[in-house]
Length: 613
Image (cartoon, rainbow, N blue to C red; front, side):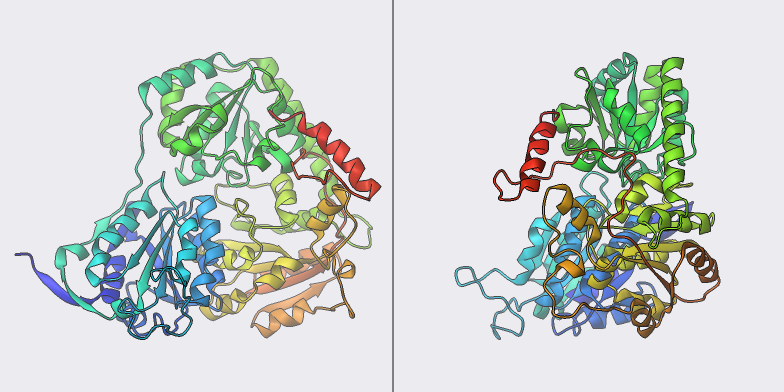
């Protein structure tokens, strides 16, 4: 009979998580970088006591907002290339539901996070307990069921021994390159405190290494045949290249076969922007160099990307009638999208095998010359829009230029939603893998500051710079206080255009009236005059407001020497965006309207839709 140890279910959770390891740079390290916790009546007595017992080998971090702490955990995993991750625990009810949005972020972006919300009593004796959601027709439903559609794996623990298979399954999902995503283990609060004789073998150290799946021989031969016949191929590199740690392999492939590389939001930084074969971003927020090559490509080699609509220009970007897609992806669901010829495997392994199969094949010199010229033209445009001017208010692009000029070799830029991601995707010059951290799968406002904190925890030696609009700042800023409390210094640049400038521009572009986006166009008796500097200071940050790009650069240089989180505020123009580059995006325009502007936009929309394939 195997040896056992009597523990509560919550104690078993903490002990199991602390025993899970991985290998990085020939060193065994914990898989879990820690647990984010906001305690309440659903988890403080059970999991709270258990985490206290493991506070040295499984650090617990206190946050100020459940969504924010989950964003920080997700950013930590992304910055760690999915090799390490974090867990998050909340009480039942609103605490748990606050994590639903963050779970959506993790689900869409294929990022691992372990969510451990408390739940109602399994024994149902005190029903309805405080914060309990009651379904009139289903006694098994709780608020945590809202996490089901945004979880890769969901389980409700109603007996203490159920945690054994549940945690094993959770780890399989969290560490699987194909199934990776959020896992929710809903922990009934009475069961957290119940004891069970757990086998000691359950807590033995386990080392989780990334699975590197090799390609099927027939899929490999078919992919090689298609690429080997291509005259104008292009590589679309996604986040999967980073997660596979295949950046060097991709570079070798591109250089050997002379194939240009364009990058999605998640894939940006897989090659440095100054590499001769890197044409920058693709799609709606793409460079003119990348998009002109993509339009005429006869083979699109999609590596580690799910080909969302911003990447494909809503499937109107690729205009070559003979274009074919080869989808190299570890997840079959993504590899075969849009009739792609799938190559299901790990990115690094697949690129190596495909390169060997292609032998000495490479594109012609004429093709190489064409994309070199396209890149030179784009760089001239990019330099023009990021340069300072005498305008009363700078554009987002000009602020990006100032931040870029102030960046160091250790700078990692973080952003998520609004107009900034589009401008950064086009204009930011990433110099090393992972130095560009964008959440644009879910485009979640409020991710930025919490995400910056998660990146800093994962990469403590990096100079983490968060760029955020005033709208996103107001949605979720509380983790500024957390970063100060933890001594994790980040630099936050707040671009104040007094409203939701990005959506206002989209509203205008679809013929709509200026309505409810900029503060001045929203219903108001008094326009708010928000002191972001004072607010940031009240949360413990060093803060200042600057009035020029030159002052911004000086403030950024000063921030590098500051010991705690620094917030720099600058007013910007809400109407200006970079016209160069980019591509049409399918945003439905009303078929019927009393406004002539909308009717004209609808006519243009119908014409553009004819380009979709």
